[in-house]
Image 1 (cartoon, helix red, strand yellow):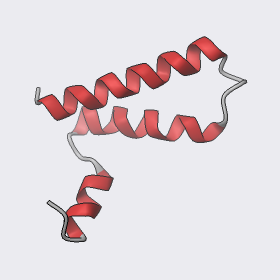
Image 2: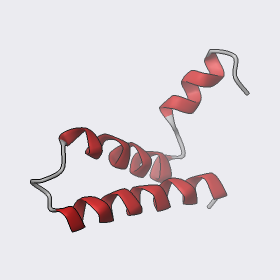
Image 3: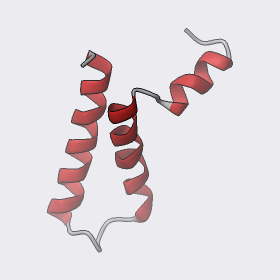
Image 4: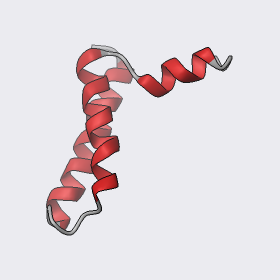
Length: 59
C-alpha cells in the first residue's frame, strides 16, 4: 500500500470518527462527501481531483 492511499484511509477515518462522535443526524450532508471520496480513493487508488488537476497542467 502506498503512502498516498494510507493518507486517504487515515483522512476518511478521522472524518468518519468526527461524524460518529458528533452524531449522525447532527452533521450536514456535505461532510459525508470527502469521507466517501477519501475511502473510495484509498480502496481503488484513483482520486478524481488529482486526475483533474493533472489534466489542467498541475504536477
